[in-house]
Each structure stands twice: as structure tokens, then as C-alpha cells.
Length: 296
Image (cartoon, rainbow, N blue to C red; front, side, top):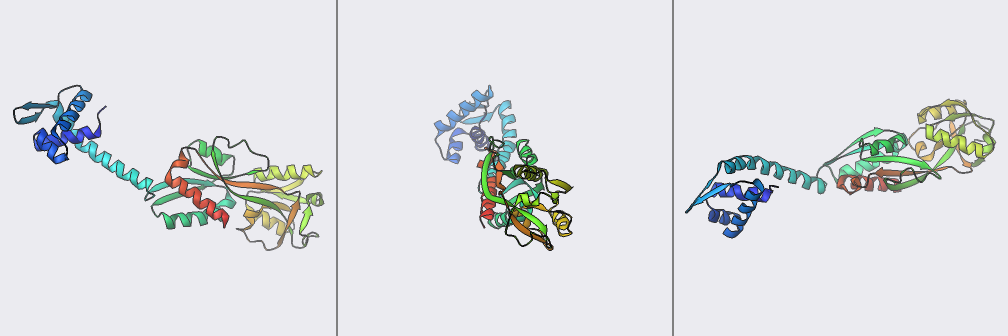
């Protein structure tokens, strides 16, 4: 295999015309230049220079290699500089995927802080709910996935790096004029006869499971992934709902009241990445800022 350091020696020999002059140019000894030239010729499988007395000239193969060496070394230098910029957080790209309530709460704070600290890092954002977001990470479609899981789900991310961010409790939503609007805590069984408005598919599953543990199956009349739509439907008196507390931080809540429901349903919000990606400086910096945003 031809090494870059050997190409540099060959190019210097060609430019200076002798091994001794090349040694002076490179700041090393003539035997060192001779040794590296022998190694390069062994890699190339053919003589590259001919030495006749004080004169050193390139063979045809040596001329070909010198002609290519300039471009190779220039490209390698550019690559080294670009990698150094990435390692030093002067550059980089991170593809982030997040669920909607994370996009409107944690992500803006984290990305603003990341840009302030490392202006060269560029982050793109698309939205997806788990488990689709984790699948995108595994398929190479993103570098970091903001996701959540409910109590008891522990094995689904065993192959990923999991950065815990916060624990988010689901809260009940009732219309402002509801009989339970002034209650602080409501057993979910008290809502058994209500019309229900369900959220995202995973939240919907947890709603049904929580209700069934309390002895009833909720009558779901409306289902939407749009949190403002859920609140609007509740405010209009069309039903009750449960939503993550995190979702409530980014929407207007006129016309509804929040109540704590028992038994409590909690979800763990995390940032996911792949083990190899976790060592990439820009990815690690993004994870750190998401954690700081969650701690605020």
C-alpha cells in the first residue's frame, strides 16, 4: 500500500533533484530518504528513480506517481482539515427526528444553545413518533432520535444508546364546565362514562390499557395526533382526554382544565443514537444540549 508520507518524499526528491537535497528540505537524513524511497518502490512494485552519480531522475513510473501525488496529497490535506473541523466542533451535520411535543418544547431550546456554542454545526429536523423514529435511526435516516416509552417498555432499544431526559406524566383534560373541572386528582374510573378523545397511536394504546386496568373500556369518539385539536375538542365539550404534560407546555389551553389522573401513567422521554454515532462530537454535543434543555 502506497503511503502518503512516501509520496511526499518522492515529490520532494523530484522537486530538488537529489536525495541529499530532499533530506535537507524535509529536515531528515539522507539514509532516511533512501529508506522511504525503497519502501515506496516496494509498494509500487517497480523502480521510481534512477541515480547516476550526482544526478537523480525519475523513471516513467516515478513521473506518473509524482503527477498523481500532487492531487492525492492536496485531497488528503483537505480531508484532514475537514475532519479536524468536525472533531473540533467547527463543522458538522446532525439529522434529528423528534415527536411533536418534543419538537415544540425541548428541541428549540437545545438547538438554540447548540448554535450559540458551536455555530458551525448544522441540524436538520423531521418529525416521527416512536417506534418509527427508532427505525429511522437504525436505517441510517437520522443521527439522533427524540423518543418516548411508557412504563414497562425496556427491551425495545436494547441495541441503541439511550440518553434519559425526563419523565413525563399524562394528565387528564376536561372541559372548563365539567363536573370534575375543579378536582385536583381524579381516579380514571370516574371518567368511565365519558366520550374520549385519543391522541397518537402509542398514547392511545396507553389510554386504553390504563382504562381497562380500572375496569372499563373507553369509548373513543375522536382520534387525532394534533394536540391543539385534542384541546379544541375537549374545550367544545365533546369529550375528555389524557395528554402528556410536555404537550401541554406548547399549546393554548383556554376552555379546558387539567387534572391528575390515578393510577398515574408516565412516559420516559429519551434521546437515542447508535453506539458509533455517540462518539461523533457533533452528535455528542446535541445529546448534551437536549439533556440540558430537559433539565430546565
